[in-house]
Image 1 (tube, rainbow, N blue to C red):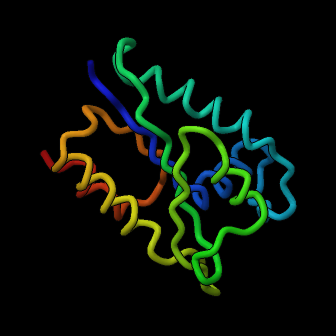
Image 2 (cartoon, helix red, strand yellow; image 1 turned 120 degrees about the vertical axis):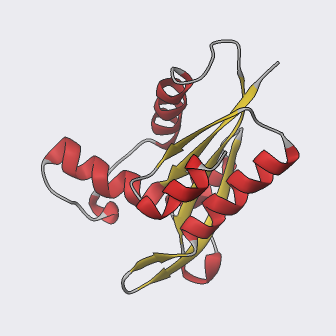
Length: 134
């Protein structure tokens, strides 16, 4: 049986999502969202990109946080079944270390052959080399 995993860059998701849905970038603190519905919808849509028989290993949720400690909705995300919260740092100019965590997890899964497919939700071009490597 094949397995797949979903990798979500939350910072990009909320920035791009607010522009797509509302026409402008809205700070996340001003957005009201349902963690269960959002993660379920992302898994459902991503699942359309992998073989129907593939089993979801888990969703990896990447975000930034002061001191890499979960705050606010991150605590709710971390408590969801089949979701692994991975935290980088936050700085004045955004998240730091999130791309590195995504790349690390992609490479680890490829090396260990724990997944056959990966769906990455991000707009960061820095991830392209890791994603496109054979």
